[in-house]
Length: 190
Image (cartoon, one colour):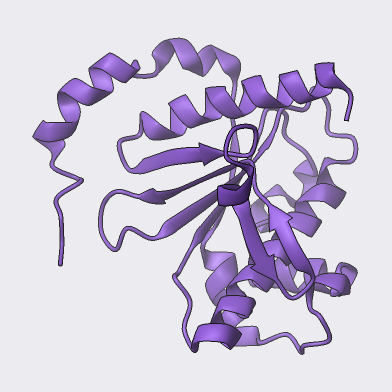
């Protein structure tokens, strides 16, 4: 990958990390540029990498996997999104197969440019998940699609669009650290 493209991706992931963490619901301590191993997941199609990895700080503290797309146009993004869906499903199915359960992970596709607007409202649906799995059977490793599991995973997909102007409206790291104790989202549970 050319260095300038990698740098654009790194900067985009850093922006999205700050933005998503400023929601106060998510922490993303790992990024593919500095913590490659921590951003790898097992799928039936082998190991795959996400751009950002962390967890929800409230509730069950479930894992969060983020794919960051700092695109300036929609071209090619829909195809990549469908691949992302198949990887999300395969990662969850692999956990289910290996451990008899899965961690109820959330998968975020965060783009700087919207895509496939004619189907935008359907991108997070079970039908779309099944379509993506049909296009990317290499991530199934010969396993049949489990409709119930596909429904669970599709319900935990989030497609977000980020405008760089949002950065100026986001809490800074210092502001975030000041309010976190008041919100008490990170209360330990045992």
